[in-house]
Image (cartoon, rainbow over the protein chains, first blue to last red):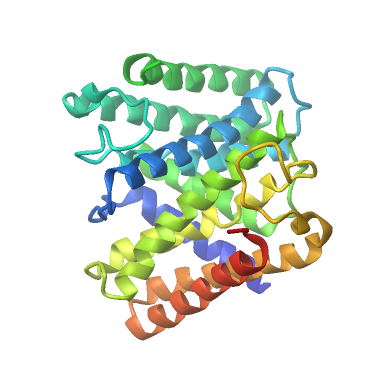
Length: 156
Length: 156
């Protein structure tokens, strides 16, 4: 076993614990601007990897089964990240399109986030299946979950 | 086994294959600006998670073993991402501090990236060990690898 593979196995074990365990104590952001920058960055990375899978499902990129699976896996990990940036007090203080009502209806917002994360998990499974119908369906459901939350909570 | 844990195991298996296998075919960015935005976003997410671990190692945040391990694991995954954004033609076309010499000395740049990724892998192991001396040492080595590449390739 190479050191590189060893390291990959360690990462894998860590991701199991990341997703299966209760979240650890939240770490503060130094200022609202930092929280805003972080959550936007995480969404940018997420959009890229989901976007590659969606483009393959919709014939805008050549289908490559391995690349589709890799990008869906990365999206599935990154989908867990942005929400740590929606801390109290970060309704303003930086360049954000987040609707301030997020902070007054956080349970509903969190449910919408969870829905997207659940669909992203199914997308990763579909991408691994290599079944194009299943992939197209999962891309549609995941995209719908993204859009629902954008419609409700992202200001134009 | 809950569906949530099942999903986490699938993610874990995926991360093994992500890190152990040769990279899949690269997917194009629509325009240089998109590649620049992506790589900067990935570095922003990386800096946040490494920063939390570093702050704990340096007593700027209370030490929480579980949070340190989680943040180091996320950093170890995200450390693999930004380099896909250094595509040919993205020396300019957006707001970037990337030194154009990156594209004329890509093997040296890639080696610096690999060094950081290797140190980030060791950091994840150190964070899991719960040994504060080991964690401090790994934070120092990882931070040095970040700084070396910034000194060489990030313009002021």
